[in-house]
Image 1 (spheres, one colour):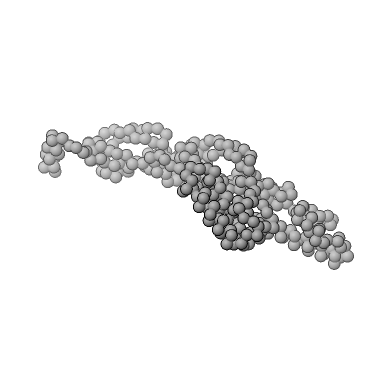
Image 2: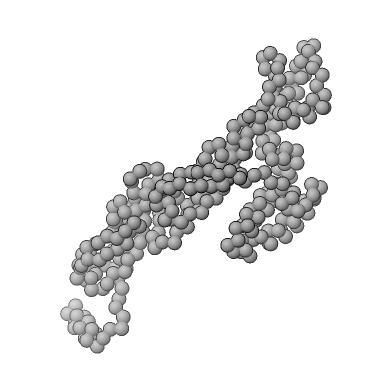
Amino acid sequence: MAFIDYYKILGISKSATESDIKKAYRKLARKYHPDLNPNDKIAEQKFKEINEANEVLSHAENRKKYDEYGEHWQHAEDYEKAKQQQTQYSQQQTSQGDFRGYNESDFSDFFSSMFGGGDANGQRREAKFRGQDFNAKLQLNLNDVYQSHKQTLTVNNKKIRITIPAGVENGQIIKIKGHGGKGVNGGPNGDLYIEFSIVNTSQFKRDGDNLYVSVDLDLYISLLGGEITVDTFDGKVKLTVKPETQNGTKIKLKGKGFPKYKKEGQFGDLYVTYNIKTPLNLSVKEKELFTELSKLR
């Protein structure tokens, strides 16, 4: 997440044409594409950097900002505004007979130190700019977010320990304040935005706080009733099946779903759908009995 040289990433010079950028991107994207490098974390990171570099350099306006301001290119408008304020200030001083002798070298100094406008006493002050926000993607298993837990991440070569609340959803983004890029001239740091990618390898389907699962039900139990044991996300429970239960019957187990995000001790519900299994490989006797039953009906 540290500043990277987009030209270096694509292996091109600053004088590269739009066509050069496109060719370099296509070549590297093919080389490091995740489909061609399965389970290769280095290639995955390289692919992300290549795409980031292309998004900036293939866009004429963004490339111009990047060439002028480097890692602070996303704050180009703030820099331009500060420069305009400095120009207006110097013009005001000139018109008031208090010309301070600003020239091109002064403006070079201005940009190197990011001086802002003057204060009420005519003193120059530094303009403070907020650091760049960082974005990261964290992949977890559904089991990992059933309970709140702490995890250590490495961001810009620094380790930070965060608490991941139970109930985080796939695609959800949380903000870690102050862990983005460093501010300019003492300005506040940017923030870190973490997007969660939740992989579900369980038998349960998740929809918000609720869970859904299908359970096979023996034909005889569905007809006569009885008890069965079913899995919930954190254990097993016994259920009483009513006689003459139909295929596709759905029951709700209140509070047996997934934790509600940032609501300690609150859970969604678990919905169990019965899938009645027809017996196979019937014996001669069983066929006779089913035949007799069919006649009674």
